[in-house]
Length: 460
Image (cartoon, rainbow, N blue to C red; front, side, top):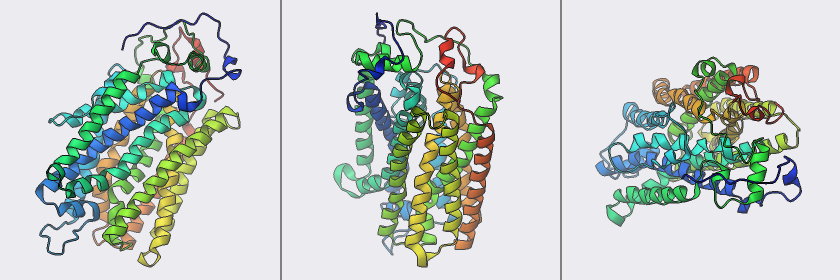
């Protein structure tokens, strides 16, 4: 939406917002945008997962149980699964993530996120517009001391959708409304359209463009970012791809994100199978216990983002060391817990669930580290470099199902132990690389020369 910049006549002092302050978070425009962004992220992942569930439901309703648990409740069911079929599904499901990265070199605008999927053949490709569009806003809307929480609120929609999509879609497939499986498309389609209208009405490129933002909040955001309220800094400049691809801080984020995504895809694709094959949970228990770790992760992401911002705002740690602290906890601790988990068997199933919940939950702290760090090192190009990193980090999503299938042919605890040790080792490598090369200040190639105040954000 093209709206003239609103000019603020008074001279802004970066400390002015301390006197009266911006509106509280529950009346804040930026937090409202964060929550609808989270809704958009959840909707995107719901619509990505519903197709996988609906396809098997079209073929045979017993596949609902097979997809979730590896076998059917009905002993007389004629559909069976083997290593090839169960991991083929997971491979197809995870490779669709790559389509999110299709517009890495396009011009960035939050309105590109309105490519909400529909029901035609190109729906998955259109999701590629959504993710970069959702995160394009935070370079101009997120004060440095609030980046963690605003970006993590947006990311949290992904986790909530991951936890809900399969049990909710399975429930919809089993009910008789609208023929069962078609109701999956109806519900998520309606939610997608609803979100699109909300986004179109509420989203503007910059705070200065927004007609309903409180003047104090506008002053707070622009003073925090070191920008003049009377100057449009949306300068079109070429993207320094050579500098980006040779930047050690950027490559450190990519390395850490690749290893982190290995663990995430391992859990997303294989958690129900592990609980069935090793912990020997029945179908009902499997569904409940598969949900708990993602609930823990959702809460950790939100609480961890508040802690990260508090460390920066109170100057207890610099941006660089805050990101590294969150990454270390979000990588190394889950890695060590996976090693512990590998020694537990079905006689210690409830302890295993507790360890697994801690491992997946604490992994959410990595969101407050590496996944926010793009905006620290290159706020102007954050969406583009995040998109490139996401593209590379989706490679584990392709490899994990086939590696697990090859290693766990006999479905024994010892074979799963190899998988967990491999994952822990990769998390350790990613942590070491990020600790050595990671940074928290704006890189030289990301500084716009005609707005040098962008270079000064927070102590690095």
